[in-house]
Image (tube, rainbow, N blue to C red):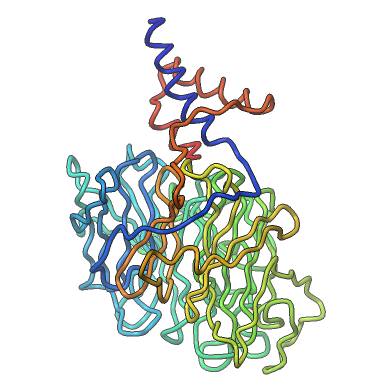
Length: 451
């Protein structure tokens, strides 16, 4: 028993200590091509606790498995193919989001966001086929919610479980067209500012483990009691509003903070930040504002009465700039480059530029990473998404069919290298050890910390 404890101690400690936070990273970076030949890859994510695979979302309606335990990684099985029910004829339609349930190892549930025939948004639950970890049951679909879409663009599509609450967050665009105006857009305010009977232009938060609507087979979720509009005017599903098209968002797995990349109308692209201790209800401004600037193309009522929040970062997409559409990103918390912890990466779809910064109340260490991250002899074009594996290592999806992984350039990876923790970090290490000794599976605790 003592030998078993010693092995557990050093195995867990070496993992956890290598993942302790650092800042102001100086590790030189590059990227390596890990998958190619895909059809419009839009997202990379992982099963909690699975350190051998990542799952790649293809826009036409497929989810592919990439075996990252191999060197080089091997693109293998199709995990799910729902292309027969996904409408992807519009440029911004298709299979857009994927999130694995925090208890996937037990219930085998995962969730997708897609547009169906007619263009409506569908959030559905599917189930892994029992005993077949590389195969999902296409017939297991249970619709969680549907949202009507007036136009084919601005569907949002990102979904993820909050790291601190295990609730499902759903990013919804304003419904499309331009200016949040016209058919299907609320007169006077636009959809982004309309919080009554209108889920467009919002960040939603729901509980998929309960059902407040047992009489409706196509509505299968509950409203978290702590959502900001419960009991007052406003749709109970809303967590935040005033968004135009939140294209790719990400939780910092270490802090629980939420970063949102919101695509602008034509002048300003923005990154919004919602801290982990937020009680929700933030108004990010659209269509009263675009970025931190008044939006005057269409008159909007009620703007003066609202508290409108500024982004933590914005960049111009106005002519003659080459930028046009922000691709929101992720915060790095991996083991390969611990000095990069806390660094947020994001991009622009048109210019294919990649930037990074750190945010601790103010933006610091802002850098243009484009040249650094272009792989030798190649360039990464039309970046659709950033994603993470279970270690916290970061991937980049290029719409043309490639997926890249960010790696240190010319210096060894620090994964598995022990480090001496700060005094304030010993409590977390001891907690991991106690949980391990008490019988908790190491792999599940590892997934909970996930660097």
